[in-house]
Amino acid sequence: MSEESGTYKVRVEHSDSQYIIEDDTSLLVHLEKQKVEVHYHCREGYCGACRTKLISGDVEYQTDPLAFIDDDEILACCCKPTSDIEIKLY
Image (cartoon, rainbow, N blue to C red; front, side):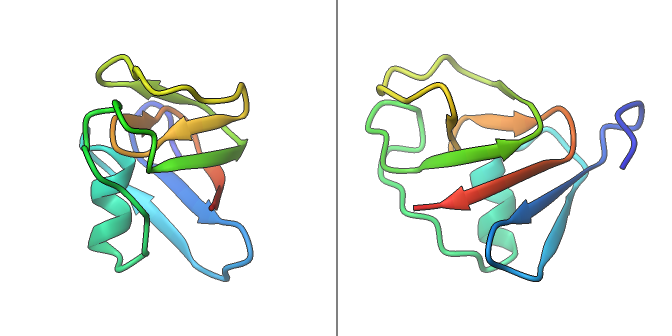
């Protein structure tokens, strides 16, 4: 979509759905609003339960995650897209 407007598409792998994100709330909050099931516990980046594979695109963290994640993973509870993204839910 448009990086200037802060509006981005989120595509979930193995799904025909795309979701639009237009504000600064976390990826987890947006997925929940769309009734996408995402495993989570703490909502603050400590536990790693919301670990998600980032296939393409970029995100930024609203708070620094403390849970261990691989280079190609993100924590949906504390990040937001900075471009269109594609993710794979575990």
